[in-house]
Length: 635
Image 1 (tube, rainbow, N blue to C red):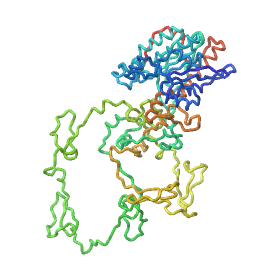
Image 2: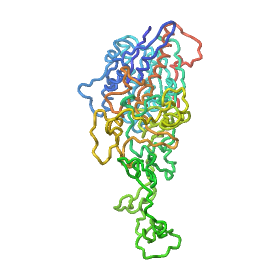
Image 3: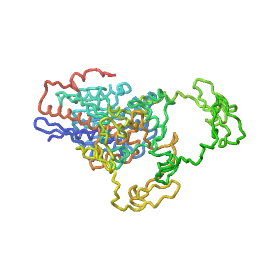
């Protein structure tokens, strides 16, 4: 086996490292692999997780800012223990050897289209952008000064907008690489989703530089693979919220009720812009109570079981009755509880004093326009109109509201985006919250879908013939269950118990569960208010649950393994969930890195075998003449 060394700059949590470590090809009867020397990053938490994900202790904490760049970025002097990195520090991190392959993925925040132009041009973000050049410069100086050579390949990954916002930097990088004899290719049309066969589209800018002396032969672009759908990736995963199987990052975020409603109203594949065209007056969200709720019992039949939550609308027990003893028929007056239409003649006026003994009632339509009612109740004023008089009333009593158009101008196109289950996902970004990107999914697993067995989870009555026995092996695929009413054990008191909301709870035991004690409650709380936070399932019109993607699912779309080398579900330690999403969004997909590493290893193997020229149908990545051309901006 032949191992080629690799070093990573700005390695983050190890997406690129994990991928390049998996790269392996066979050529000429030999196995060629990449061996990771180090992954450098300024963030100790990222380095900690890098080693947990890769299973190797290769992360090095190192801040590559110059002192001036540090001050511009942080806004203050560095602490006394901080010092500027030198080429010698870089050489030590490399293990006192020249890496065959150098990969760098410098911070892209200042070059991203998600950052406003004014901020991108600030002194702070310009200092951050300078790391694209400084990282390569430090590495080349370290290799030349202390090793007397240079890497055979150098690769840089960043966002496509670097071609415009970082055009000056790219010219400097190109000039530096050509100075050291590299053939250089710069393109912004590389889809890492297709390179790695991911479930997302991830278009990126890549530089690949080839030392023409060490590798005189060509490198070929990795073959494209078909994109997976979101459902292909997250369908086999545990259901969201199952943190035992999916780890702590598989929690569903507790969103405001109004956000859940918005997600339910947005069509699958759409985003916040769909909300502008929704006929909201045609919708209402209703609670679907269990069978029997609001039930009215028949006087002549046996009543249902009395439960602790007995009350109209609160349970399916006996809570109302059709009582015949009122005896309005026969001797009762014809106009008892009579409600007269507003547009018809009244019945005879009698001396009765109440509706229960004959006094008439009327359906009065003037309620909404009666004298004295404020004309501005629930009034919405257009943003281009003069406001009404400001009063001291509440909103419902006359205080005005405004149709504010400004909310439609500051959201990214994918904000509140709900992605389709059977389509590839959009790029996983480091700010993948539902308010900023397409980070929600129309999950069909909560309801029936075409192809699902009609008897899935089927419960058969014990006194009826069984359905056809099929070759399926479990209840999820169609094997039947039976409602066995035979009691074969004597459960303890309180088993399947439902506690009364207004009573103290029974003792909580170490085995509290609905099957072994009173571990359920009759919850009478009404619909949540707009600002209440929680996790709710609202079935959208397409029959699916429009919900946020969990952080764990975003990591899977990015191509990380479901489990860490130590056997735990994929997780990141020492950071908040929001920071974990940032780390994941900034990572290079491991599968894409593996594919790119394979073509680099193949070129290295051919160079070792002396293959200087060959005919191939594959597209060439770095041609010799490309090093002599101007930087081409690809839109």
